[in-house]
Length: 158
Image (cartoon, rainbow, N blue to C red; front, side, top):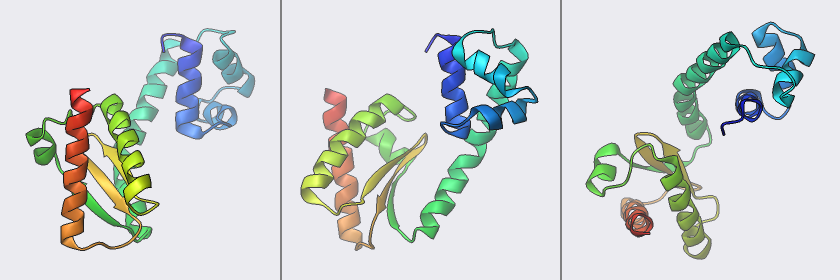
């Protein structure tokens, strides 16, 4: 995403959703039409604004993992965690979002045919989490973990 206007718009949407112009303008202390000009490529985004955006992204990165964990706990969903060591032992690339998307696609296909609707694979840079719609026994959880690692090997081999 080398185009500054596209990047600016993507950052705005990631931070504030589709209606990002007003909240981002407020946060940056500029007029809404200024943000609109930046998003539309009609005006150059100043370097200081890029630095502020980078800081906002960093704040979100710092706070979101803990919030995701809390949200999952309030959802009263069971989960299976595949930690860094298990991923490393199985040569699963840590933090590789493109690899994860391929793995998630393969997992979703498998779940649709073989498992409970609502089972989701969640990406974190240091681990993967399988969010489950109901509590499972230890053996079933281990089988799910094994299935993810098997799918990861298949995805890795191409």
